[in-house]
Length: 390
Image (spheres, rainbow, N blue to C red):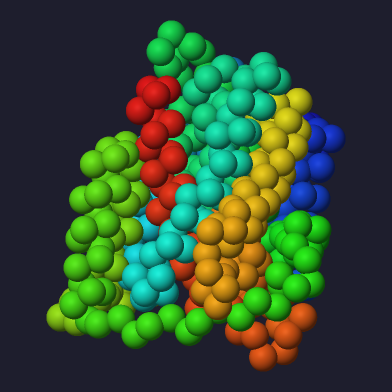
């Protein structure tokens, strides 16, 4: 009987808590949304599965380490989680993004870069809001970056500013899991969140503005751009070097024309492997006792506000720019919504909204300019926050 009782004490049925059940249901919802509605399946399926894995209950005793949980030293998940805690996975994701990104639309119409910059206002306003709600400065900085709708950047910054260590004399909480889940959730919900904001802030006349087709960009321009952009952006924000360095390196591999094998590997096998590891470990880090807290709820609320403000900031700045632009060269304000760095989802939303009001008005290529500049902008913002808060 002792053996049977010991076996039962080790099972999940004996050790399950209501929190475990809630989080397992959350993981199932993520998987359902990914499969049923095609909401970022490459992200939500690994994250959802990770949430389930991280919340399978097992026997825990202060003197026994079964080496199962993600926070238990020596476990497989703990070793894989090292890439999140030390900020290794996000730069590798950026390498793959750079290798698959075409900056032609931004090069041909650089003024649209301002829309990507304007969308970052959500980051800094949410930073202030998080301070007001009681988070300390490093934690508030990590939470604010959710507004960029850039999961890798959010994970990178939270691994530096909200990792449970002492930063500038302030004890921070480990908020990597909640921040990452919030960032990826809002990335997946871009097609749901952005359209109502875009319609609210624009008139029907503005939505049907036609923009001139972007000019063709030479191969030389495409090669020079990542080199010049790397130097300029990292001089402004050295803290963003791991992200921007890999982003522009990946793009140079793509555009040079002589490293096709490396570019192909970066944008296919490498980014796929890292996405699996990142999603799985971030999901597994959301153990109920760590994730189900009042701080997590506040992070999701602040993240939503940050994303809404970022979308509105891009749209409104496009309207302001139009005041100073001559007729015939005006910007369709819908394009401003693509300033958040959810690539290419925000650009697709802009395209769909444009076609909704004019079936022959294609805005995708125009929207890609602020979209890719939003990727750069969120990384620069992360570097700036690090320089102030570390």
